[in-house]
Image 1 (cartoon, rainbow, N blue to C red):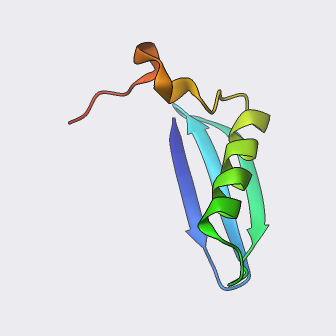
Image 2 (tube, rainbow, N blue to C red):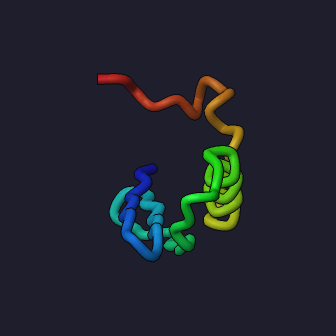
Length: 67
């Protein structure tokens, strides 16, 4: 899985890719008063909506190789 992020002055656009397939795109309004926790919750929810298991990283079979 790859997460593509375009951070603009008005919106933050997220794209979730699984191989060559785009499995979800989402838009968040850019606001200076959003906390990192709020962005984390939004991204976690978007991952779940796209069919990814947010807590998958805790299991060994979900870990990606480190280069």
